[in-house]
Length: 361
Ligand code: PMP
Image (tube, rainbow, N blue to C red; front, side, top):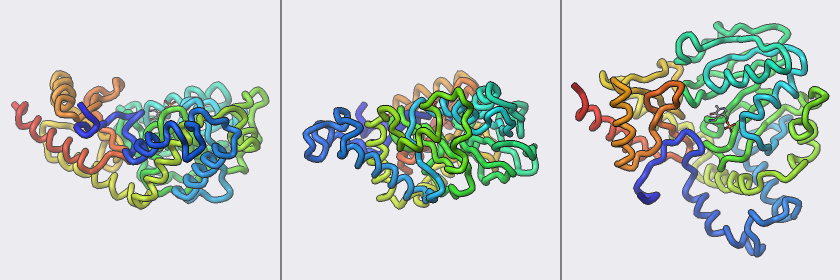
């Protein structure tokens, strides 16, 4: 199948804007008259430094990041931040974690190595099918930070409000960053792996209130220390050069689309098509409860695991790819990141209706 014949619903790495890929293709062998590919350049060269600074500035603009907050381009995926965050911010104290899904649970387990982790909420008893209300959060007065995951990629739930806590907010936005406006000043730290809404895998973005840097545990590796990375402009060692370049191209595309405001409208419309269908159907069941539903990852199932498997197979034959749910939930999952056009969601909704008619008993 060719690119024109498919829609890619993968949870990440996932679809990127075609204009960014085409620009990269045009510049692959010779970046703007430098005679070199971005892949071949010294990260210390002025031409690369310009790409790097440009990407940082574009991201600052896209999310209206205030001057109080530093933007870091790091490596190790979102997963390495599960450790870096407590090593830098917990340092033997206590922190509150809202465990609303797979990755928040892993982050909490990792943090336990570096201090006291208190469960502000645990979604496991209801199969992680919802987000807690503000008054359900158990917050401790002495917490160094309150940790949550804005969008639960695996379970398809998403926070629809910014929680309030006495401690700085620390948020994993891996699967919904740049999909809606964010008031960055409310956060101590926001982080995200790039491979959904930003760039290819290999880059992790951390947006950090500078006031929180400089409290790392003494044995924290240099590469994981926020203060050191701030001091070195994210270039203590070789950064993920190609990924940062791709981020810059994706941010050009984002700006041309109308920025995060336009992305928020689009995500509502895309996901709305699928949730309307799920709510009307007696064949499909949505995993997430209304009020907690993600507009990035729509999780659902048919009446049986066998039909789920058949759905994945028949959808793929029609060019609707990567719809299998995560093994922790089973069923089906449609990931609808920024670069997924509305037509992709329409094509999936049409397929779902046909599949239901064909297999309803
Ligand atoms: N957090 C969230 C919300 C995720 O979706 C993922 C990956 N899908 C991770 C963390 C882990 O990211 P990485 O693979 O970049 O370590």
